[in-house]
Image (cartoon, rainbow, N blue to C red; front, side):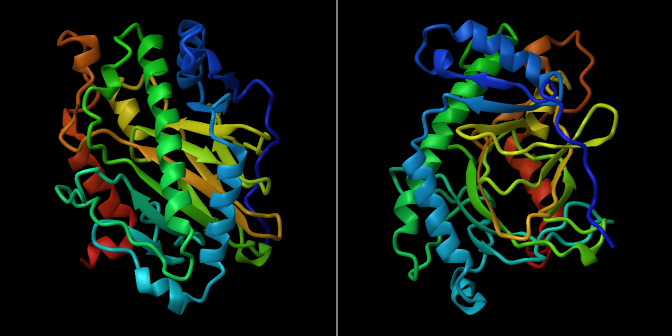
Length: 321
């Protein structure tokens, strides 16, 4: 028995883009061009100059490890709710019908309105926080806000790269469906075989994913030839990838690429994940970009309806609700 195999990363396959000139307004056009080019290739990008303090990332990781290293009985006090908030235990996610259940477990939270909890969609509602890690709420919400700001900058860059108004993808983001998660991957024994994954091959459901890896490694991306390549951590960077909804919105111009996690390190792996999505009523329709004369690959759908459908297929607890 052995692990699923992947090739070493070609340095040109996943570019590193410094988004500082986009964030500070000094040269957004050059960053937009780089983001646009990368989105049409693998759809994966290393981002430097993101502005999230290293101290906040370290605090988030430390508190996340405290949570996951607790007993299942303690974590079960905030078992995932019907609105996808709380602890998602190992084996509760399955990326497609033929895949084995993932080894990962997750702690999930999301956007909070200053006016109180939003519950107008099945994928949001009250966040749940573990009483046995009291510091987790503060650092998790701080991380969410800062990663969400990075996502906004990136969406402006993608819009500019497509010669659109920079606010095109952000017109309906006052009450976003965005979520965040701490994702814990245990050490993966080789005897589980090549068909077992921390998370099985999949594309991300939403618009954009902002991932902060630790130094463990394990992320693998499928290249244009159908071969798997490692996407190792690069110090000081985030990994950003196009999701299915952005690909759908751009009629396939932006690529949503399959990826997976195989943790061969012999130690724990922690990912900090921000899934950016606009308001649930946002209509995802490529004709908004290309006009009615363009043959749309997909029919229009709202962000909320699409995510409800995809989550229902991937997470076993939702089929039991």
